[in-house]
Image 1 (cartoon, rainbow, N blue to C red):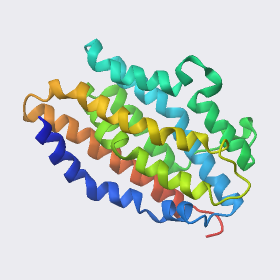
Image 2 (tube, rainbow, N blue to C red; image 1 turned 30 degrees about the vertical axis):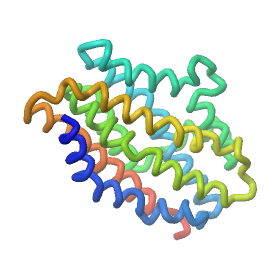
Image 3 (cartoon, rainbow, N blue to C red; image 1 turned 180 degrees about the vertical axis):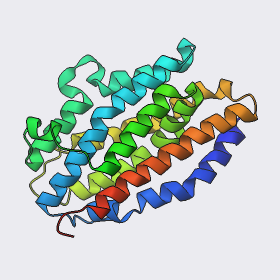
Image 4 (tube, helix red, strand yellow; image 1 turned 60 degrees about the vertical axis):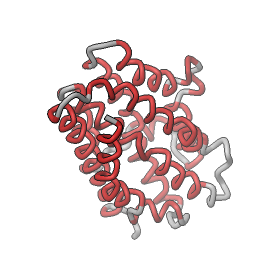
Length: 228
């Protein structure tokens, strides 16, 4: 069981490295983006941010037992500020966007790039319409496994912008401490379902599809970057 996840993580690592070393993430890390380009990134990532609780909810609805579902419920609870809505991750993201120069109406009406839409709509389909192990594979090994590494890169990049304070980038920094336990909790919940090759393949399928979709998201940002 543990061996399966170790082998899966090793298999996924090349695709994860392609994301973590993506040219657009490198631009963020180096503080390369000007303010308009930064705003472009924030608008598109805001779409993903608004979808993420829906991914969790859709996947949780398909899980047949409470102990497995609890890992996603706890994640959702944290997404919603553990009951303090001013600390919800969506509010933290809105605060970040306002520091970049968005109004909330402008942020929420930002049109999605075609690649952003492909990413979020297909992830939603994975979580809502697939076998629950496919959804857990997408959200666990395919997302939470490396989110803290990804957000650490983004947070460090945001620190290079003098007009952003520590509180402005709290959305990114808070995830660095949370997402590692999100992944370990999810794996602990999934383990009992890893009983045969079919269950392993479902988890693997979800993880690989989620990684492919996230790569499409970053490719779209790079390909459509204004003023490049």
